[in-house]
Image 1 (cartoon, helix red, strand yellow):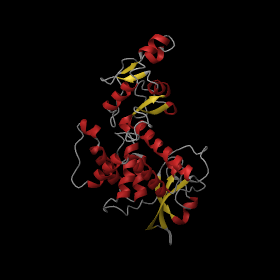
Image 2 (cartoon, rainbow, N blue to C red; image 1 turned 45 degrees about the vertical axis):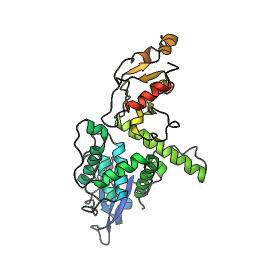
Image 3 (cartoon, helix red, strand yellow; image 1 turned 60 degrees about the vertical axis):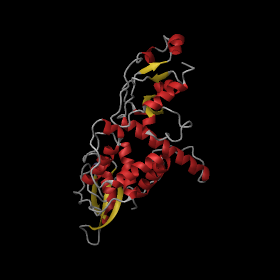
Image 4 (cartoon, rainbow, N blue to C red; image 1 turned 30 degrees about the vertical axis):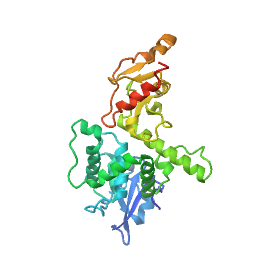
Length: 321
Ligand SMILES: [Zn+2]
């Protein structure tokens, strides 16, 4: 088995290690159960037929090696950790989060170290600092360096972080970034460009949706397939803010369209407003939309929308309104 492959019991190989297993000549490999998400160690010799100890009555798992414990975090590890920080809701950074456990197993580090690393990123987050989350501890330069690099070159770093994570997991970047591959052109320059664009769009989507805890910020609707990470200032108009989660709103598809077409906007008090022409032209038909007029936006714990970008959106549609 190679990392990324599954055995016949849906146990996926997350990582191989050099740590001795309990069988003769075996090493400890780390499996991730495709049925329940349990992560555990097993002997390399029986990985191909291993059953999950948690949900398939397999024998108890071996301890997961933490070879990197105590080592300095590399730039690559920081970038991968930042990727995860970007995609999990604030409040989910703890040692029981399956994503945190998975990353620790992938990196060969303690779950507590990964959780601490992610919390350090939260301390750098201006939105969280504004809410009184205290500043960085000493000796956490690596986090600050990656945070700054990301602010300056988000598109490059977002793609790189997904590529690095995919390589560690033995999966394709298309799979890790959860992008649609059905209509991609054959391998070549054109395909690469499209993949890069979609990976970054997907990264933006996951960042924004997770920040809003997968709820529409107007209606509170939590149905994920109907949620859109809406750009406040469009992708094409502002390259610098393309991946900036503070240039995003989590909206249901209908309000997203209304916002995108200037039929809806957010005022200075962070309340939802609808264009007068919607009221006059289609008052009856637009009942459901208009029911939310004047409601306060349901703001996220992190990455709250940037007031100046919302002002730009209002400005852009002033004529139409
Ligand atoms: Zn399981």
